[in-house]
Image (cartoon, rainbow, N blue to C red; front, top):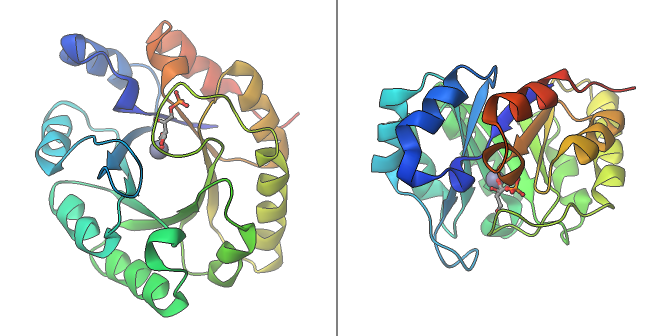
Length: 220
Ligand code: DX5
Ligand code: ZN
C-alpha cells in the first residue's frame, strides 16, 4: 500500500522534526490539502508553504485542491512543486470538456492528474474519465477537516470504481482520503485501494509506526 500522510494534521510547532520523521517513515507521498474557504468551509495552505515542504522533503507532493477554481490553482501549485494535482468534479460543474482539458493541461506540464468527488456526489460522475486520469480519489469523509469518521459506504464506491477501471483497461490508481486508521485501511485495501491518505492517524500517533502500519496493509 502507498501511504500518503496528510500534513493538514501536522503539529506546526514541530514542523521540521515531524517532516524529518515523515521522510524516514517509508511514506511515498506527502498529501497536501489546499482549501480556499469557499469550496469547503476551511482555509489552509498557499503555494509558498508547498515550496517550504519541497525544500525539506523529497516525498511525492500529492496536492488535493478543494477550491472553487482548480484551473487557476493547478498551475499555481504545479509551479510551487506539486507532482500530482487532484481536483473535484463539483468545482468543474461536471463539465466533461473542462475536466478533460484540465487533466491534459496537468499532463502537458509533466505532472500526474487525479479526479475526486464529495462522498455525496454520484460516483457515475467519474465514469467517463477512466482513461484520462492517473488516479481517482475517493473521499471517505466530507472534505474540509481532518479527524472525521470514515464513511462506511466508501468501501462500495471503491469496489465499483475498481471494476470500472478494470473494464476500461485503465491504469489509474485508487486513493482513499478521510478517517483512515489501521482498521479502515484494511477495509479499503480489501475493496481495491492502492493509496491511503491519513492525517490524524499518522500525526496523533508515532509517525513512523503509523506509516509502517499503512504500508504493510494489503488486500486479504
Ligand atoms: C479532508 C482532507 C483529508 C484529511 C484527512 O478534507 O482532504 O486529506 O486531511 O484527515 P484524516 O486522516 O484525519 O481524516
Ligand atoms: Zn485530502
